[in-house]
Length: 314
Image 1 (cartoon, rainbow, N blue to C red):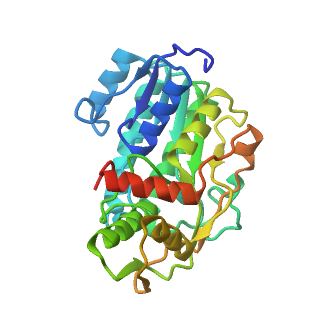
Image 2: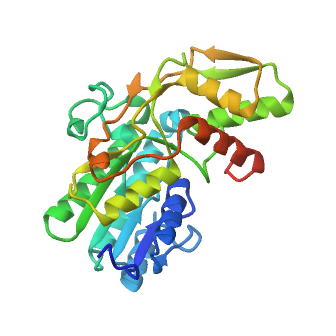
């Protein structure tokens, strides 16, 4: 079905950073029958609305990029909301799609589904082998449930499903709200604002020692469409990562340089660090030809430029 450029494809969450990147990539690859709905048009938290949409539209393929997402503080302080809303969105979309003719389902997961303590780089085989990172347990449980529901439906012959697990993401449409942003966008805002305000110092959370892996949303979208077209792994998880990680202190330095910040960087060690390291093994994605194109230095410059243009959510 993937070779049919006229197949009816629904991208859920097309206004978000991930969904909009997937939408751009599908259009670039020549898919011409893409269905989208804004939240004002279709609230995926509402079961009846979602069921009516799928019964009417009957998409042949679905990319589920709609989710409630946020950084470490948003996750820590809203565990119940992250668990409930993501479960609700996933259950409504997956169940309705499975009952209305969808034959291909792409589920966007998260690296937080992996245990807090596991060998590095993280292989897909480590899924469900240990306790979660407590700062984002609610979100992790929801994503795991969605992956499992898609996989069980695949095993029952309902559809072909792919479970994609990206590393930390950033890019066009990122969220710069300090209360809910992820680390890349949060640091971008802090350093860009510091330059604009002439500040002599910037305070960052934690010790700066944890290491993280970052992938630009456009690279994620390219890898996701590649797996849509050629997925030899069935419903087994597939990591999409950059292939190397960076200490948060070094990331802050990279973003500060991209922003032109020359002052001092202070680390507030009373704030949580999260997992010590999250580097994913991307051998499965590499085996089908996925190689990221945007490195962290270029990505930092692009994100600084986007923030200064006011293009992100803040």
